[in-house]
Length: 336
View 1 (tube, one colour):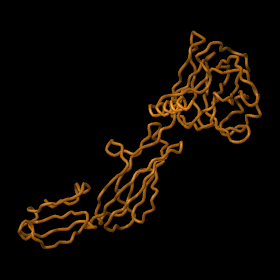
View 2: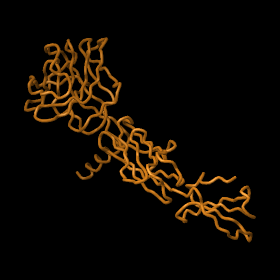
View 3: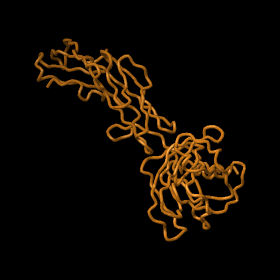
View 4: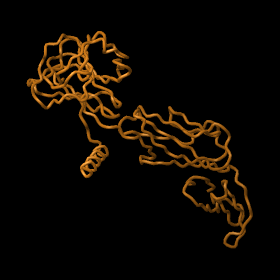
């Protein structure tokens, strides 16, 4: 038994790592779906377990069988209290042609990304004619079934489905192909990163952009929320432009900030931003360099930065040699 559970756990982990898909809703691969002659213009809410979403994720596409042409709304509902459910998102599609075979399944793409959370359920409605067929099912009552009511009473927002009619002992030909949510990540120059590093001088103007943060998500970039978790006297973060910018005159030194990206499922990832502020007017000293007198410009505090500009034979700038230690000073000083 332990080996079986371990194998199942590994399979589940691999499945999510590979981004494989699941299906919730009716089993459309079986035969026997037909019209039960229900009144036209109904909306449906599924409370049977196979129509409930098992985790937080996104809908890739819908699959349905249809009986007639007309407008169909495929929906995601979230339980609130008792029989009150809130409409989260819906996909509307106009069925222009009925498949020649009653067993043919139609795949419906979602023009926008549809998110769902654990415990959300599938619903649907049609304006006039009954569009989704059903078949007999061994499902029993006791909350495991479908609520239906006139479509005119389902205008979005929160709906008390308990005011409708409860039906059971059937399965409807509608399902959703889904995938589990994946966490966001940060990028820089097209590569995934966990940290950013930048150097600026202490004369940088106020409200000047220091670094632009890029966060991405394989599921949905639009709904990502990126924020700065560190309070700073010198820097702030604009959540719209994803930019760290200066808000006070700077002092030389190191500054560490934490940026966090969070997706609609609550999964988050952090990146660390190191900002090094160097002196704009470096101090000079007279030293010996290779046995010759030299004027040395020492740039940056703390001194462990180790960046000096050494001018051989006096102060003629064209003969200066830059001596650098560390990778963050690619364009720190240019005296040539």
